[in-house]
Amino acid sequence: MATLAEIAAQAAGCTRCDLASTRTQVVFGVGDPKASLMIVGEAPGKDEDERGEPFVGRSGRLLDQVIQEELGITRARLYITNVVKSRPPGNRDPLPNEIAACNPWLEAQLELIAPKVVITLGNFATKVLLFGTPAAKQGITKLRGQSYPWRNGSVLVPTFHPAAVLRSGGGQPLAQMRADFIRAKQALAAAGAAP
Ligand code: URA
Image 1: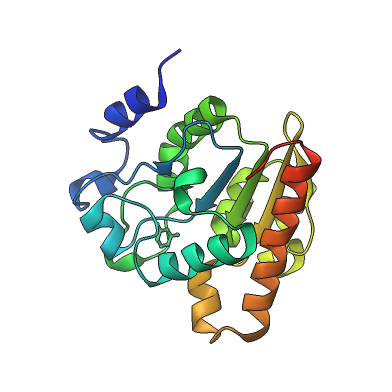
Image 2 (image 1 turned 180 degrees about the vertical axis):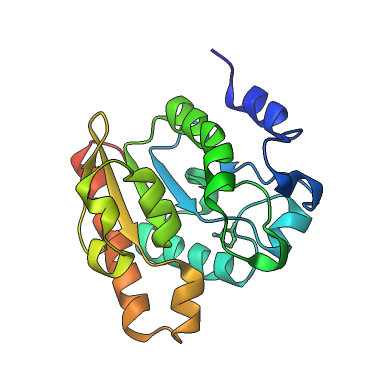
């Protein structure tokens, strides 16, 4: 089986969708290839497209803060990626065909890292990873606030996207996002995995 670094090298030249012609670079993922916790966002924005790393703009700063304050670790200890690895122009929503084209990369990451707990940020990541289950029909506001047994003994914890939390000005959505991260920490402890 290929390593994560080998898959990342393959993905760097990916032309499976039209985003290949507008992106600066593929933003594959960052962190510990053996992480027990994986965080999945939507798609790279301008900052991520320039730097080649997920969540390095405003949303990323909020994400790093919540990771530090609720889990007590830095991003190097977990693995962070997105459903779509190339920036959609103008930060528009990723299209269904782009999500489908990129899905094999995400599935390869999930298989190789085999996280015990996955936090999905926002509607897109949550719907993609709960695809085929009854919960996938619900929006993030309904789905967040609980853990979902997922695939082979893992746990999925959906929460708000940090960009949505920033748009709301913090407040209740931020408190709920923090509570979801604590939920993920508890799920890790229950699985015998330190974050
Ligand atoms: N928003 C995302 O969903 N992913 C990023 O990497 C940055 C912003």
